[in-house]
Length: 252
Image (cartoon, rainbow, N blue to C red; front, side, top):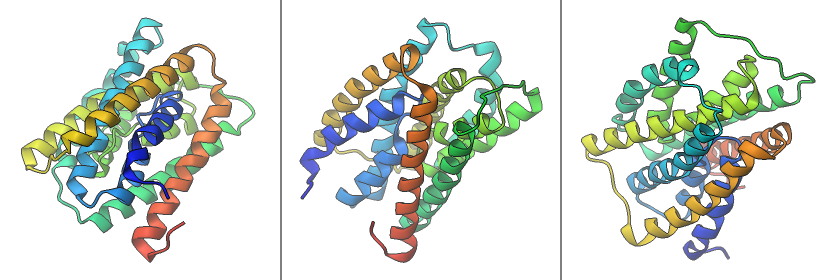
C-alpha cells in the first residue's frame, strides 16, 4: 500500500513528466494529495507552491534558450494575473472544487489529444483581443481550480493552431508561474493559505529535481508530439478519476 512517505518520489516523476511539456503538474498534485491529506486548503496551497517551484526552472531554461518571447506572450499574461487572483479568493466546497477541476481536465485532455494526433502541427497568429480573452478566461479558471492554468491554456492554443508546440510549452510555463503566484497571493488574502512545513520541503526538493530534468530535455531533445499524447492521456485519466470519485463515489 502506498503511504504518504512515497509522495516525494511520486511527485518527482510527475514533475519530470509534466515539465517536459511546459506544465507544473498541479492537477496531479491535487489529485494525489486528496488521497492522503484531509485539509482541503492545505492541498490547494501546497499544489500552488509546487507549481511555482517546477515552472520557475522551466521558465529560466526557456528564456536562456530564447524560446520565450515576451512581445508575443504579454497579452495572455496581463489579462490572466488579476483574474487568477480573484478566482483564488472564491470559497468552494471540496466536492464542487474537484468536480470543476476534473471536468476541466477531461476537456483539456481531449483537446490536447486531438491536437497532437493531427498530421501537421501548423500555426497561426492571434489578435490582441483574442489573446486577452483567452488569457483572462484561463487565468480565472486557474485561480478557481488552484493550479497555474497552463494545462488549460496549452491544449487550447494547440487545438487552435497557435504557434508550434515548443513555443506553446514556453508560454504555458511562464503562464503557470505568474498565475500560481497570483493565486497564492489570493489564497493568503482570503486567509486560506495553509501548508505543512514538515512535508512541503520534501515535496519541493522532489519537484525541483524532477522539474529541472524535464525542462532541460523539453528545450533540447524530447519528441513533443509523443510527450503531448502521453500527457493528454494522463490529464484525461486524472480528470475522469476526480469526477467519478467526487461526483459518484467511484474510486478507480
